[in-house]
Structures are given as structure tokens and as C-alpha cells.
Length: 330
Image 1 (cartoon, one colour):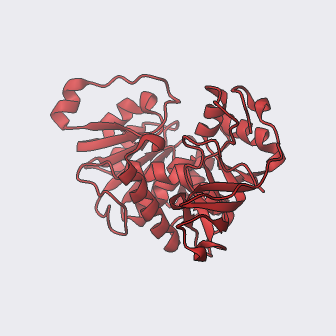
Image 2 (cartoon, one colour):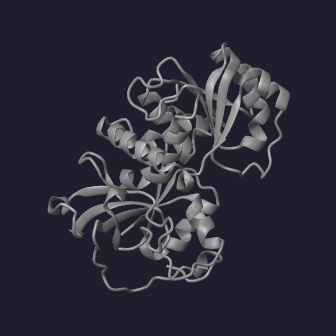
């Protein structure tokens, strides 16, 4: 936990009483906590008003329920989402109380590591994939049939989830990567085509693969990739961007966007409409049940695992841009 903002050394391991669930809540014995970029950014930003336990994503087992929650949920394996959003209790702790809808059943064949890898990355990817022109509000098998999706940065956590969900929904998936190692990860995730943007004319390569243009770009670097996106989008296409690592500003040609009816959409899971969050959770659960969402190196997203007492190192690994998913085991 931490009580003031700053570098990862503000995190301390603290003993606290085991919490009791209130009405509509469940208590989860956390098995794995997932770390996302927004977790270290929140810690490094504004100091919390009270003690703050970090990390939004996780997985575990329901071990107690509050009033109004079916007793049958005790013993249920679950994955967790938005645990620390506008709350002081994140997943980097042994026992966590949160609203029952934020503890979602995890199929028996899905590992706790996979469960802790889902939340923010998969919900971001789902939102991006449903923002295309006439796109579905919720993904399902066939929902993106006949569409071509370009995933920028297919070796990242969101990129990996976008590839898997887009393939599950029936899209043709292209992805840009920075070299052979990341191309191998994107291919393991299910991308049909990879383009090394450092090896030549990426726009030409994408246009050869998608002569009519791509319908939707899932974009990690809108500032750097604006010209590329413009070059490969079809008329009526859209860009859904979820990060600003390429810079705080992007320049777009207004007239061209107008003439071609192109759209740029920003995404932050925490401020998404409630119905979009619930649609994402429903679709992600269906994809998990179908075995269409995987994780680990064989699925293109290597795990980097730390024990709870090394949470600071886990945060530093994410801040340092490690390729894969950083997890904390409890």
C-alpha cells in the first residue's frame, strides 16, 4: 500500500485486519494481482486521501459474501476488474472486498494467471473493437466478420487482447511490430499478418495485404502513427487510441478526415460508459468460455511474476516497458 505519491519506494508491505463484505459485496482471497501502466501512474501521481492498495486487475476465490449475494458464490473462482477505481482497495493484498459484479466467474480451465491478465487490457481492447463504423456494441463470434482490423503494437498487453478478441469475432487481423521477436509474439496471439514498421514502407505493406483499406485501427501511438493510419484506412474507417506514449498531441488534416468520413476515438476504461464496461465483461467472459482468450508466452504475452513483497519491482518493470504481463502472486 502507499499513503503518498512518488516512486515505487512509497509502497510498503502492511498487516491489516481481514475485511468483511458489506451488502452486495464479496470477499475474494486474491491469488494473483495484475499490474497495468495506470497502476504505477496512479501511484506516481496525486497522493491518495487515505491508504491506497494498488492494482486494478486480479483473480482469486470468493471466500465470503455480504447480504444480498447468493451464498453459492463462496468457493467460486473469479477474475477482478477496476478494483481500485475510485476506491482505496486494489488487488495487491491477500483479501479484497469489492462489489460482486466486479468479481466475474473464471472458467475452471483458465488459470489464475490468465484471470489476472484480463481486466484493463481486454476491456480496453473490447471498447476499441466496438468503435468502428456500424460496429457491434458487444463482440461475439462473427460480430466482426468481413472486417479488417489493424492492431498497432501487437506485442503489447492491449494489442495482444485486441488480436485475440478480433480473431474470435471473425475479423482479419494485421498488426505492426518493431522486429522479429515481437512479430513472433503477435503471431502467437493469432494475427494473420505482421508488418515490421522499421523494415520498410509499412503503409505500402499494409495496403498490399488490405487493398481496400482497413476498417479499424487499434492504436497505441496516435502521435507517431497518424500518417500511417491515414494512409491505410478505408473511407469511413476509424482509429481507436488508448495511450499517449507517443506524445500529448496529434495533428490531423481536417479536410481529409471530413472528405473520407474518418473518425478518431479516445479510450480510457475507467471513464467508459457503464453499459460499455458491462458489455466488455460479458464478451470477455464468453471468449474465456470458448477458450479464445489465452495468456502466457505461448499466447504471445509472456508473464513476469513477482511475490507480493516485491510489488515495487513489479511496478518498476511495467514502468520500464517490459514486454508481456507483470503479475504478483499471493
